[in-house]
Figure 1 (tube, rainbow, N blue to C red):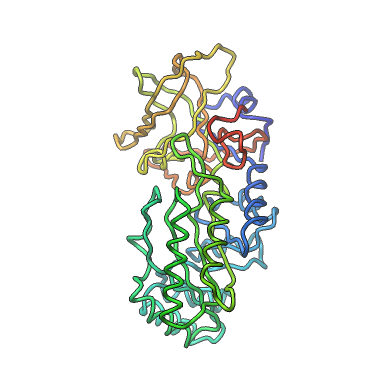
Figure 2: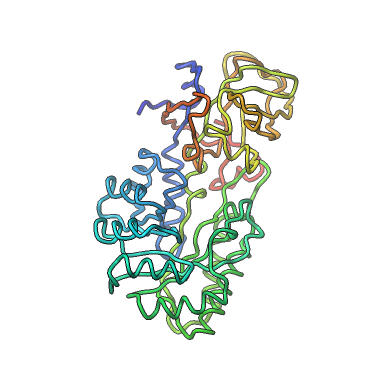
Length: 392
């Protein structure tokens, strides 16, 4: 993979007419080390967030050995890169064929579920194996998350009681898991979820071997400035301690966005300006899905190209290159007022889901990926960037 000192060098060297995706290995190193050093248990990287092989290689090289997967293809991907990885099959709805292949051919022993029917599938597809670790995913409020995941997954508390009892009878180990929602903006969500786990333990008199606090750990965006991640992890530690259990279960977490969001960015070129509308060569059908459907405001900056940038910043919205009017990103994206056709823009925080959601709709697709050694536009791991952008 070709490497550049920074995005300015990349653009001025390549002068690309296509969107360019940038990977920052140093950012991955910082985030993985943070979770390894501060979370009191195992850290599972959520593969769905960014399954790019180069990104995964950097995650693995920085000591992440456990992976949250949702499909056979994700399992195979990790197996190919790290054969001795501990892989968890955490999608709560799986086909019998996939369960059987995961268990008998790929050595998977950890499976998630949220219904009795899924439990039956797992047991039958593994020939009632005695070495399973089963995770009962419970439904909790996602009120503080930017993306609500509670409508699709999770057993209600009343249902979870029976599932915990059933899994206890059939599994080697059991876990209780939850997810506070993607980009969770308040640590109290973890407190409430762990309290619900405590209620299940009291009613069933069963202490799980593992508590999985899931993902949802946030990144930083111009309009989403969460409190330090240390506060989230301290909240988890305190909430577990308040359960006053005679034996403390093993803890696992599944960060995705918080590990990789800052590591990726996309460089786009302006094709046309209509007043405060910029038509760019990537969009919601490319790496900018988060800027469209969930309307994330991505950090943005005009890349130095030899001409003076206006000090006055103007709020722009973007239109992508396809013929679909849904290819629209409301923003606002703050950029120099004199930006025009032919200028380049870097859009940050795209390490999470940017590559995952790309399509080839209308024939607009770019797989040009490079490494840069500069800093991300914004960082939650740098105290100085809480209220301002980092300067590349």
